[in-house]
Image (tube, rainbow, N blue to C red; front, side):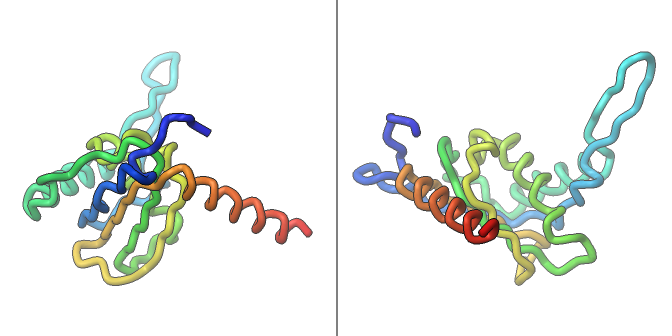
Length: 154
């Protein structure tokens, strides 16, 4: 673990949670498109994903949800509540996390320690809540994950 104290650990105090409303996400299966124009494969954002990104940017501006937000620069947890759709629940997280990173709400989505996805009341399609977690919380999550894995394999 990192020896530098996290801003989420005492005595530094946690920054406030970030809560954002976004449009219903694009399925992970529809985020990227690949093609071979000549001799090498090119991967690019799909038109559907580009359209979603623009809609998400517009929604954040319209709802005024960009004011006063400080990015989370360390480990974090995320809760994503989605309005029920025909998508598989697990196909909703990747596009949202990539968007959050591209718009500097988080430093890097690989710092995510815990993702909770659920169907529920999301007024615009997706409500995202992010919060920084400190080293103690990271250890707790990793211990709980290891204990669960041991129970499953036993």
